[in-house]
Image (cartoon, rainbow, N blue to C red; front, side, top):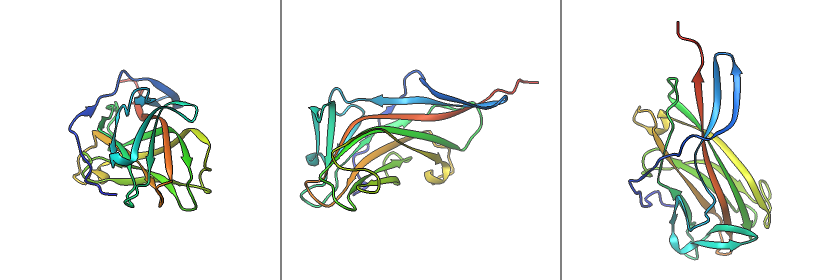
Length: 205
């Protein structure tokens, strides 16, 4: 898949922070997941853009779900994908050169065979380059014909990935089909993006 997909300049600003699964490690610090964005695709592609638009289709209702898009392997032997604009990170209250983010999503695979699957990539340079974070493959990770809700992956963003020594302030994600037949389909129902924010609770002296 080419990394030279369109790269709009618009940044996705997160709404007022939603607290998810707060975790207290000790009396002086805490870690909290906050929601940066969430989309159930009730109306078109929402926060995502189609890459290889011929092979990305939106359905108002399919497979007992409302608001679903299909990503498939193309007849011209290319794998289609969907990607976001820049997603702005919330600023942590302590100094840190790495951020943990979590992607939660629902998916359904159709007609995939051994070694077929899909991948999650991310970019920290406005889509100029992409890093493969995780891939899921039929048999090993999922079966065809089943909705998998709340699938998730957690990973770090840091200056090593940025390549300039600067702190990462935003990132993009991309979901792409990784298959070998035009009959191989991936359906996505919803996507949620969260950031782990650390707070220093030690009283000032």
